[in-house]
Amino acid sequence: MARVFPMPLRSCKLLLHGSHVSSMRRPFAILCRQINMEVESVVARLNACGLLRSQGLIGGKWAEAYDGKTIKVHNPASGEIITEVPCMGARETNDAIVSAYDAFSSWSKLTAVDRSKCLRKWYDLMIAHKNELGQLITLEQGKPLKEALGEVAYGAGFIEFFAEEAKRVYGDIIPATLSDRRLFVLKQPVGVVGAIAPWNFPLAMITRKAGPALASGCTVVIKPSEFTPLTALAAAELSLQAGIPPGVVNVIMGNAPEIGDALLNSTKVRKITFTGSTAVGKKLMAGAAGTVKKVSLELGGNAPCIIFDDADLDVAVRGTLAAKFRNSGQTCVCANRVIVQEGVYEKFAVAFANAVQKLQVGDGFSEGVTQGPLINEAALLKVESFVQDAISKGAKVVLGGKRHSLGKTFYEPTIVTNVRSEMLISREEVFGPVAPLIPFKTEAEAIFIANDTNAGLAAYIFTSNIQRSWRVSEALEYGIVGVNEGLVSTEVAPFGGFKQSGLGREGSKYGMDEYLEMKYVCMGDMNN
Ligand code: SIN
Image (tube, rainbow, N blue to C red):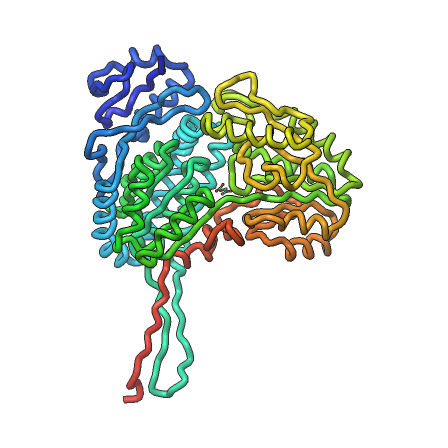
């Protein structure tokens, strides 16, 4: 029988042995006995500060699905049901779009300073509630608590950064070609933004979109992943507490194709921003053509991590470990192929295996755990099938290579050698804790292997040669390059890919442009 978590007092229902009853009257203590004490206290704390929200947000009001349908949110570490959220569709999305559209006229007319103050307050509240947000991330996404707290700092950082950037949306004066003309360029918000976010960073992928959108004067309809809606809802609750007016931030979730179509088909929505798979990104890009919307896409990667003979091995092992095993391998910038020069291949393989062996797999709430579960069974099956495909084509598993003894969604940190280019693990994003090692002889060969993919998001190189680091960085067809560094994501730098890894950039001063229209104004008859 699925265990039950207490629902927030403000929510309408809770799932108890499969039936809905009012949470208002349900004594908290009775429910607490049914769940593990650690998770119990997390849920109680979240409830106490009103952050365990389980309804959508439309026009500043918490809302159920109009037909009453719900979807269950699970803890990926245990499979337990945390709560239910509304399974919304086209009607709720259209109402959220109308709310965002109505709110746009006043929000976009606020001074940049006033919008900045609201965002700053939102950031301050996120930091004040960093522990609760971190716990919520671990609860619904599974990553270790320490990593989840890191995500809160990273995610809140986008709000802080764009609160500051709001005040720096400058236009231009253009020297005119005729003496009676004055030419200038204004930057204006694009309008209502549909923001579709993934489950691997339940907070940061939302703030990376909402931060610049709100800073520039846009309003948003956010669709978090159905796997991890609770962090998005908590962030939305904090946006209201920060004084961001109703309708500026709306959150809907449920039937993804219906929500997506409603966002794409509406002429009121002027931009779609999406982080997720390349396949879905292509569909959104095609769908946006119907109403010619602006589109930003952060899609899949196939990151090469190149270790040259001249690398500092300690730095290379540390960097590769971070680039590969962050979030149990579930990021678009995770190293997908570890490409190692022949002279150092054996030495690196041994040192890397020693480091990987020390990773601790388990529930993200447990002390010392560095590797949480995968998001669900489907993710685990995909990882399993990629490893099986490699083995069937001659690869050798030197570490891990199977489900972890904890069962459920846990997979052993894995290293595979004898990997060839036709294997799925070197062609596609594994999105799990599997590191394929691929040998190479020359720099040119490494660059060829690295670029031999349709993806182009992140790449990593480890070398002590300054000229090589510059040369190879230039040759790599990637939007992000880490040199002697495996963790490169930050709110102050542009995040985005070449080729089929996406369009546009998020974060940094460049991220703001994605939410702005440029307007050229030509004033004539200026000599009178
Ligand atoms: C992603 O996996 O999509 C984002 C990773 C990051 O921000 O570092």
